[in-house]
Image (tube, rainbow, N blue to C red; front, side, top):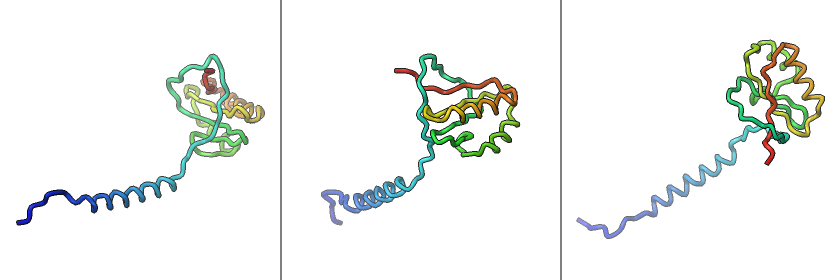
Length: 124
């Protein structure tokens, strides 16, 4: 029987390089679903403990319910099903139109929802 003095790692390296190529290729194809919002800064920022609903207004005025883009009509319908106890976080881009922000607040207040928090970034 033949005795091995060393381990041949070339097949292992080949397999690892192929796996690395596959991972890098698929990683670049994965769609990153993140809503780009730059929050305004405030000194009185607090940590929020419990959140039921997160509503986001982007710079261009688009409205997102959680991570799903919705229209103003859809917002009106969704707000009707919220309870007074529900906690609502508003993430509004700092350069969004104030008109869009007021529309959202008015829509929430029309359903007597008062448990609303406006998310800001803490001043550093």
